[in-house]
Image 1 (spheres, helix red, strand yellow):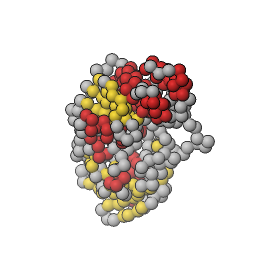
Image 2 (tube, rainbow, N blue to C red; image 1 turned 60 degrees about the vertical axis):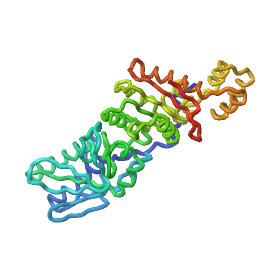
Image 3 (tube, rainbow, N blue to C red; image 1 turned 120 degrees about the vertical axis):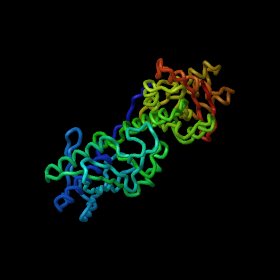
Image 4 (cartoon, rainbow, N blue to C red; image 1 turned 45 degrees about the vertical axis):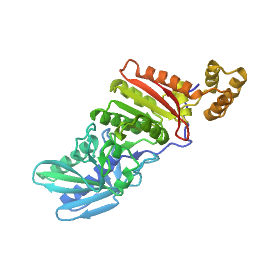
Length: 364
């Protein structure tokens, strides 16, 4: 079995820019206009690793006491929900030194502990804040200005777009988060999803939750949530990254974690895969055939299962012989999950769910 197979695109995928990079560029353009009366277009910024991308302005507005600039986010070839969104920065000068951040329309506000930004603050993450603060310091020095700056970030249709993200579950209300650590979006990167898993665990732990559930999809999530009566904050949108979730729990444990998913994906976990995506791991049907033999299946059934096209087909073949592979997969997946957790004080449950949302295998 090969758990590391990756589908490689024929042409290189195009990188994009984070919401934080766009907000920083918009802030630089707006503040420059407020200080000297002219918008730089395009506007260049310096990212944490030294890159200096330039951004074309999509919106300009200058009044006596404030200025605003907008940039359309280009996420490259990444399937980012904010790709194409208009990110707007409105800046105002303050008498007192410092930088004050405000959440404009479409940017959320933090309402729960456990995130890198405090409760009540605009959902603008630390690195974008640092980038914008550096721009403010640079421009105020350049134009020999004292005092401070208020930065209000808005994202067009951000409140609606946020419904497609983790923000409501994480307690970020009113819109999207302004994210980014490098300023660059690497297409189809797993890192952003895994980082969201980590933040979900952080929030749940900060709220004192002791039983979390990571699910591969909405059907398995609903089944497991109803089965255990868990609150929304306990539900971790694990997706295919079971390894990313369990490894984080190894260092940041809770008393109990439930892993819920469909039969095929949890079969891959049972076989040792930690990334359950169809392009990065496959089911080993010979392994499954051997396990069915251990359940009492005969050689003929084993042969059919080893040639099966899907785990669903394998399960149907086994069911005709009065053998149920759901509990088998659950037990094997639970054992593998405990191996990943090593000696962390975390108890694991497994819930195997069919396509209709019925739990067909439980372990732990």
